[in-house]
Length: 391
Ligand SMILES: Nc1ncnc2c1ncn2[C@@H]1O[C@H](COP(=O)(O)OP(=O)(O)OP(=O)(O)O)[C@@H](O)[C@H]1O
Ligand SMILES: [Mg+2]
Image 1 (tube, rainbow, N blue to C red):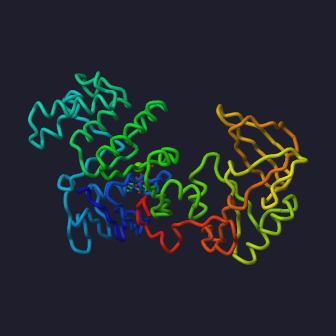
Image 2: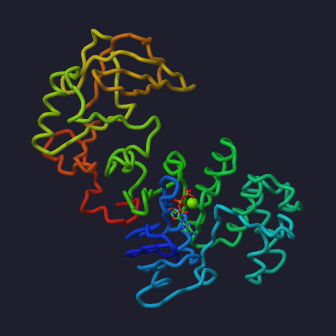
Image 3: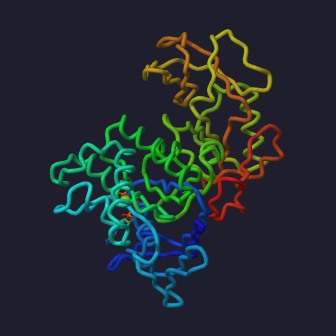
């Protein structure tokens, strides 16, 4: 049985620091989830993972794995890392320098008294999977950073832990290998049904890997949800902006001149501002559709006229910079855009693609009153840090 992991009121102050690295973290991670902890540098991702592994002590709070409390400041309980049945790969992947790749990968199995033939077979299988079997007789010092990183992954996977903790484990790989390793990790997760906690600051990596994403900022959990939920129903402006490339566009209600917006959008903005306290609206670049200047947007859409400021091809898609009244917005398209610098275009956005935020930057969750607007299944009240991708 793969255990569920529970964090309650986890706080972490490093000695000498007045600012907590992690503050008041509540998190429930269901069996077999692939949870990505996502956030900018210094937001507390590694600290959180190290506390779950038992390598760092919380200053307050409790961590439970399955039925067992493994750390409780209040109850004075502490279970050491080797008794938590977790496998980890951390940012610095310490391999044994005096052991070959093969012996490094077999090491954990040897500790568990697994016989030599079984060890060899298990190590070979995982080395093969990660594409490093050909280096099995080499020593770590004869490998590149990326190869060493894969050996560290292989060493961890060989013992088939029921909980896998990984801290930026693909950071030293080139783009192609990163993608291959991601696909491999996804497969391994499906095969083993282990509970995986994977730390990354790369939103794309989190979106492609996770069944559930925990977005953190400055030591606090900002949102917990499926990749779809995080992207389409961001709980606040921080999450909305952190996920998505190019980033979401914001139109500030108070600050900007809206005279270039269509009458229907102006009306809408007045309504949601006075009726719902909305202070800004977010629009993802792919939600902005373009028509020739004389084109007619659908009746129910919010539209306006804009000027093309630049067209940037990215290979398979295009980023188009538009000046819309006082706003500068970015749109994306996957088909060749039939527009040029200085062209006047009609742009429109479907009502359901508008994200509304209040003065605190929180997503407005009472949008039911506005027909056609999306609302999150993780409402403010529900989203207390329960990671499950099935509800
Ligand atoms: N050993 C330590 N002693 C004191 N402060 C620390 C220590 N480790 C981390 N911190 C501080 O705690 C905060 C969180 O650090 P943490 O390493 O958890 O961030 P992170 O999200 O993993 O960042 P990164 O993406 O850069 O790895 C940071 O402000 C950091 O400076
Ligand atoms: Mg880190």
